[in-house]
Image (cartoon, rainbow, N blue to C red; front, side, top):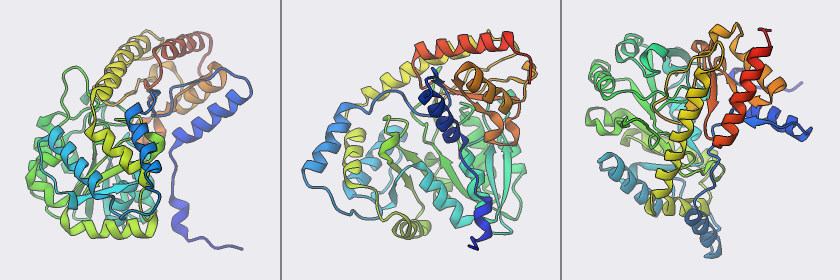
Length: 393
């Protein structure tokens, strides 16, 4: 009998991929499935980015690169951070990784161990809790509440810190709720963290370009008082519709950077070369493609929110960022995961049950509006028919 170490029994999953697989299986059977489950832009990668990747291959960029990423890309990332956030970041503090999850993996491995506590948003990206539990650390959920517009509360977050706390994970704009934390809360959080100098911070800002209604994303990089313990997470997947290219990056404080480099050497060696050159084209090229995509998401956001609020038993506050709506379905009489499952199987609409994002997700489902306006309207019609014809199961 094979004996796998017990820690592997604690690894969770991201159920969006399970729902995707189920949706694809139903489609293969001939069903017409509308997928509002997966967090993936439906737009193609911008042509100039694709061409840069092809050119890199034709130019012979076929070999290993440094584990930290090629210098021209790290320099482009530094320029992008200066342009977007007004913060100077040395390329020597930038780490190029194959997707955003790798930065989470590295940071949580560095601080998670039995006896330690790690704070994470709940509802939140499920990999946070999964990796915390894998390390043996205690996951401490920071409630993300509908009444706060799905933004975190600095006071509540700080109240959860104990002498065992090693890492705090912050995500704004947020998955799955679409909340954007206001500057006043971020200011209060940073001020309060002065009392906890040994707590590191992982700031997941992968949706940082996607805000609406005049909301502004405030990066934690702009707070010099925590830069010596801040890990910044970003990447190309959402902003440039490059999910399959697997290109992420992070900024590390100097004491942690070499640890991240060693993890990269041991885990994945490097990010593939052509993707890195494509990343330079994305960051240094026109940003019109980003503005156009966000404008399209904004139009779809209106359609999905108005449509959800017209459905029986469902209410949905207006998300201020990312491309997710997190409607409250508690008045339908359905448990969230049962409703999501029935919507897929019976109505052909893929969504994600809120509990897949944490213990505070019950009563909600997540819809991605990174799908076409036409498909969103069709999905809402199907949901309406389902809710009017089916009692809670």
